[in-house]
Image 1: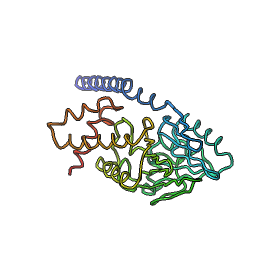
Image 2: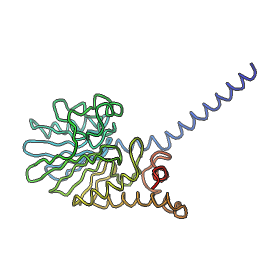
Image 3: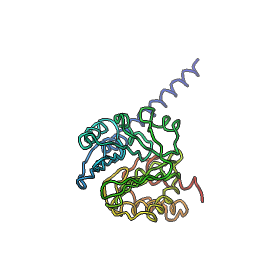
Amino acid sequence: MKKLKKVAKWLGLVMLVVALLGGGFYMIYLRPFIQKMKVVQTIQYDKDLTIVIGGGGNSGIITSDSLVIVVDTKMDEAAQELYNKVKAIAGNKAVLVVNTHFHPDHVGGNKLYSGATVLAGANYGKEGWIKEAGEQSLPNKWLSERLDIKMGDDTVSIINYGKNAHTESDVFVYSHKRKLLFGGDVILNKQCPIIMGKGRARGYLEAFNYLQTNFDIKHVVPGHGEFGGAEVIEDYYTYFKDMKLAAADASQKDALLNKYAGWNSIPFVMSPKATLKAFGKEGE
């Protein structure tokens, strides 16, 4: 009986420490990250393009005489605010929702767009999508490869990358007239990635090569972080090359990790060390 009491007391202490550590981790890292992600900024790029930063994943509203394209639908209150904005802009025009990938912070508002076409990469499949994001956010159309849509004097290309990078079916949206790319979470601005599930660190490097080879990109809407120019891709490309080098060369590891100390990160899951670890697991 005494031994059982000791074990119970020890387990209780362990649970208390875990709870305290978990609470501290939330307050120090997760809460500020979530609060920052909820902040919304609207950029009127031109009369036919509205960019909405934050509130979950970054979004865009592209307008023509007969169609409105919505890139990612955000989460929580920001999803409703975005929908209200889309409704005011679209009027009686058809609406096409494009999901860059299936994470809930990018697709939480899908359920609001009743009657609209909701398009996403075909590599997920219905079951995989529901497991990740829930049935309410399920698309009603799957993109296998590429769709080019004429939008007035512009052409908007929607591309299912179809190889493992951030996920197994990342979608890019490119405005040819503006030379502007919506990169989803394959491209972040000064924020470390979360590489999990079928995501691959080396897949990001392959995706950057693909984008720079196939598109003339002058402006970038990243999945998270501020809107910017081509330097957003270059900086992120350099980050991944640096983490690959750090994984291969221990003598440069500390310097390369410290180089990104100012980036938005969460220890263990979304940090330079986590990216380095992913490269190590994938090997050559």
